Length: 421
Image 1 (cartoon, rainbow, N blue to C red):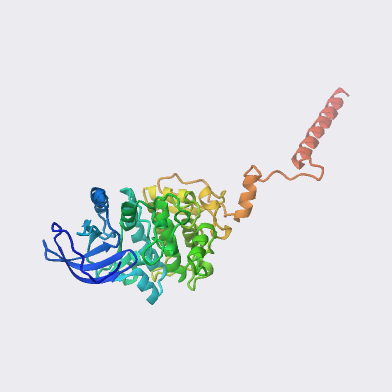
Image 2 (cartoon, rainbow, N blue to C red):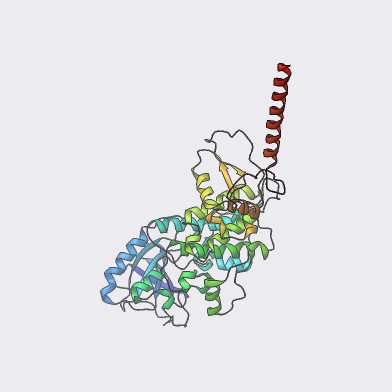
């Protein structure tokens, strides 16, 4: 039900709709004037009708979302229902462009991509800490504000939109979004960015949003979706649920260090338990990637012996964040941790941290061994090479020792006999 009819708000709502500026499967978007301040706001009016008994519940949901006060989250100013009981939300008016429009018009450097995603993760951290899961993270819900300079390369501040829209649908219908058809016959939530658990109709938490962020970061750095060949709804949902994506470096036109490959593939793990545990941890991994691998122009630094381009396991990034001073990252030969074991071997070579507060070690760190060799060594049950053996299995050291003992006995007997003469 999408018409040009001006929505009739209840008398207590101090907003005057001016013009319709957008419409979609879920509802209409109106530019409006706030009767109290005289300023302009945006009103999103949903198509569905809200049962009178759920008005109070709607108010509680609005209050929960209004607690997300963060510079990267669009401000929800109000929430109510029209005279015909269609729910609406009132948002701050933004100027700029949605990220999906910019992605169609230009490519992004690694620094720009990571900068945008770090802002997105900061918004999700604030939301998840208040118990709110977005459920529909996608480029069209990431708005780049004009006239700001928070992002890399002149990009503006990112604002995450549509918090509460999916939750509002559940409030109105009592049905999970994936099962709710719209007027256009499309499932709510965007299939291109749905997590595997969403595609399976299972319960979701903040790690579902991280999967969607992983898809967005993949697109930003590689210039294409990880499942670009899935052109139908069912194909896309099956791909999210079952297919392992190729590393973005295998399809990107710009060089992508293996560590960034690993961060993205961790976010895209099918099992939520194998992803970053929360948005803050994924952001921390990206910040250390920026420190280690990006030059001033936002492109990847040339690889060196020290910069092996491998990912930092989640446990190590936590250690890095807790270090009292700037950490020094040292490669070492170690067994792959659970946080890295599920990733492609090409993207994994564990690294660790020697923080400034740690006493200096007497010897330099050993040269990293190739991961298969390290894993094989761990499975053998030891960390040192066994002594060399003769073909019959007797250690060479044992033979030498026996020979020396026998020689000492012979010399002793000779001296004793010589003394008796």
